[in-house]
Image 1 (tube, rainbow, N blue to C red):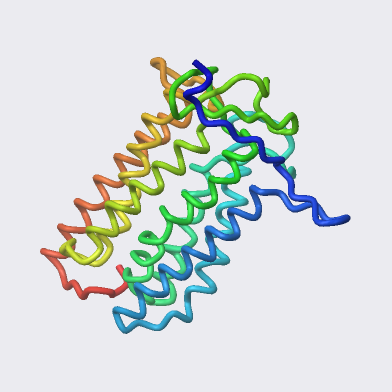
Image 2: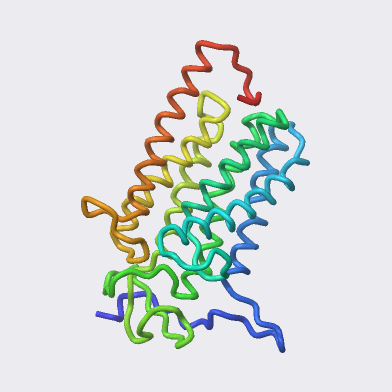
Length: 260
């Protein structure tokens, strides 16, 4: 049965002489860089300045790290200052708040939020490759064809001889699927800003189902864990937000790309 699963035997760290580089950090950096290229391309095609992207990238990183760590500590406890333990939802939420606040204050326009939203799924997919290599965010043992056996003894899975559901791999797949959808819709949605609500809703829906195969979020209520309840809340926010956004566009002054 184990012949059907995916086997990864890569050491979680790359040794470059005396220097150790973590795959996780490397893939996240690549994901941010690729996402920046996608976002910049989107803005250039719209004839909009790409200068704010540097600030938006910094806010994305800061929000991802701080929000991810805060949410993890709220879920699992432990010291606030630490290098291990981050949650996607916390980083996603704080980064979104910081970016939206900056764009609104700078009157940059919703077009910048859409550009970041378009690039985000691809950046997440690339960044999560490091989780697959490390064996992070694993779920129960499995012989499912997408289960991953991290054969390197330095990986984080409990047993290098066994395969487990891989939250990292599922997030790679989810990111690629969301990117494929929003790339197809990028010029077809009726309003600037709709792209961002769509990305939020698709990620929330995908992660809700993903966490049935993961074991790294504490149970909360009704057989669902913290991450699933957070996903349901974010899905509700996405639906309500897009509805209000559309209503505002039809009942009040609306200028594509204007700050709202």
